[in-house]
Length: 321
Length: 229
Image (cartoon, rainbow over all chains, first blue to last red; front, side, top):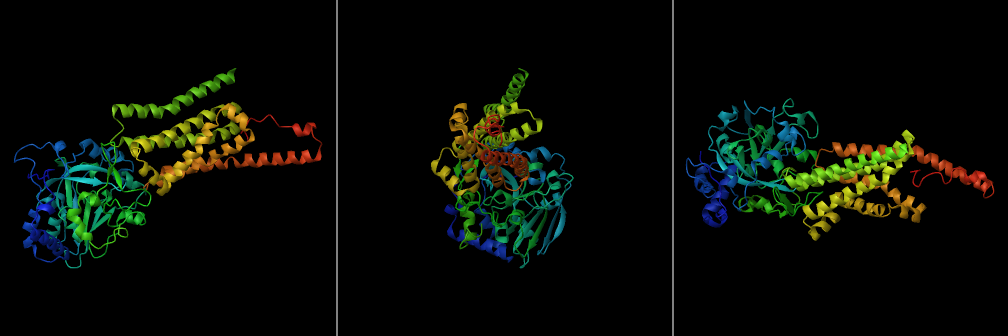
């Protein structure tokens, strides 16, 4: 397994990438978004985004020692697995760890459908086979104003998009969580409408930062963190990171994501981390990093502006929150 | 003598129950088992304790009415003071630990975030009640004490709204708290109607009969302060 983690000493990619490659990357994303060809540019574009390996082949990685590209240490495995928002298992932070023991993430089937040339339904192992998993340390910022740093293991969603070949009608990707009330006690209540739905614009889905995740701390995802397959979109609020995915559908219209359905006044489709746009009931300017006593300032796009801001150029982020 | 002993026993139970959350949080903070987000845990537990305390103060009078056992009134002040203690603790933890005493964050939140505005208002309204809870104040303020302490009917409602507005989607417990509050207020209505009728009857009699007649003294002076709440 190749393990790539960005180191604190690395300068942001936007500062070191030659301009032509940088522009080509944008073109690559645009073209992928349009479902066009032109994928010959992919290798150079993705090379600019590569995460250097923290350890040589065969070396053991101490995941607890990993740091984000800004030098932030990862949170403990205990924190990552015992402080979760996963309403399928209950609404308190400790419910998912306590109530997910009966959940069976295998065997598992994932369906890819909608406006794609290669739809299909796969066993998880089959579904994952073509992709090279890598480790990446990302910040996760919850809409509730706390944050955590996690070493995820997964692969870029862009790789899947390339493989299934969306047609010109595909403008958005919609994800659906499994419905299994017998193993998910939260689904026996009506705190949220089930199944949980999330979505991304196609260019967001193909952004090199966006991951389909199968593990953390070098291990398979625990049930409470969204086993066996979840989404991670590090510049958006945590609720965009839908868990226990069973369906990935390429659609023409903007998906009705669950929190938007529940309260469209408070939760948008985009949900980009933005310290300047408060939640109607609380400020988003600061956050509590788990494990820290002092609040820290929230970063625009959760600190990933260099890689994502261009996708929202010209958009009124107060309106499209 | 027996009454005295029962009241003392109830007070001991009250102290033990009311201080349990404090001891639990203190131990948890010391040994580090308050979970991944200890500040949030401190806020939740003190907030919930405060709300339970506020609702408990409203429970004393209905309970007295149902049981007919008047010495219960002696638990009302300590319960109210414990409620105030938890509100003050909740506020201090929010201000000191959560916002790190950052004055501009604190004032921004109080001004701009309705759930914090409401909670803060409740805290402010409780301060005069706590300050005038002494026997001396009761004597000095007389009737005005009763009027002032009617604020206790408002503060738990602010607490419930504060809680309800702070929750993202699972409002089941805030709603339960609201239902308990509404029930405790509704059961008072018959008592209020009755005492109002008694007051107007007394006033009518006073108009009919001369001052100092036995009828005008009936019932006066036998009701402890605040007992007709």
